[in-house]
Image (cartoon, rainbow, N blue to C red):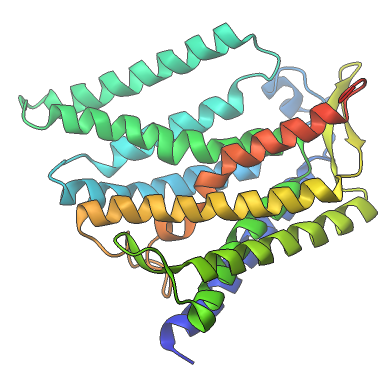
Amino acid sequence: MPAMLKHRLIFGTVMVAALLAVLYADARLDSLDIENTWLQTLFMGRTYLPAGLLLLVLLVGLIALAARELAIIFQAKGIDVPASTLGLAGMVGAGLIYVLPKGLDSQTALAIYATALVGVFIFALVRHAAPGRTQGSVGVAGAAMFALLYMGTLPGFYLAIRQWHSVWVLAAIILITKTCDIGAYFTGRAIGRHKLVPWLSPGKTWEGLLGGMALSGLLATGLVVLGNAMELTGHWARVEGERVFVQFDFPLVYAVIAGLLLGVVGQLGDLTASLFKRDAGVKDSGRSIPGFGGLLDVLDSPIAVAPVAYWLLQFVALMHAPGGGS
């Protein structure tokens, strides 16, 4: 067995197990009653914890680690931006999605987001120029905006999904996305003949893409069948001030479409990351994960998938709302 494949199998299994452990612990917090405790005061009178607290902690940690790799990519392009600035920008982007109330009107939500965007922009400029530097100011400000969007806002959609859906729906999204990566890798190695984008990613083939999509579609269908049977599919809603889970069966035809779409978008995310790395003249974003490269090399496809998955779930929830689809 090639060393890279061996490392991928070992470290891939470890990462999946670690993710499932965090999600399981996060799901357990949903049933924690905090009424008449100091936590109820901390969370402004809630009798339950906000969903996704552990996921938020995990995402903040990942952003901090990925910021180092992103800083190296920018530095390879002559943009000397500190990893801490990129990390802060990413955390702001993700944190905004988590803390903004769902019922907030769109104009106010947009104003808050834009204000935070301006704040990060000014912070990056002031930090860079404070020692009397002018050279590179445009690049540093642009890098901070990129980090807020790419490392914060995009994966922040997982926090929005978690707040109103079962934690296992989120786990399914990530597994389906990475399954397409696995299917594309093995199918491409076995029968790949026609290059997908040879000037960008020579190892990817059309046969690999189709194989990955087929596998992600099959997995999505299987997970939906299992989720429907175990009554895990549905979404959270507030009923008379209480947070209750509204269960409904996820249509199988939607599962197939979602599996194929998430697979394709995940591959586009991988290609987008390849575009960034080729522009910077680096092969991998880092060497922190044997067999994979850097953290960004693992997160590239789930990052791209997050907003698509969010809107797919919004559509399904709308179809199952009272009077939905009529």
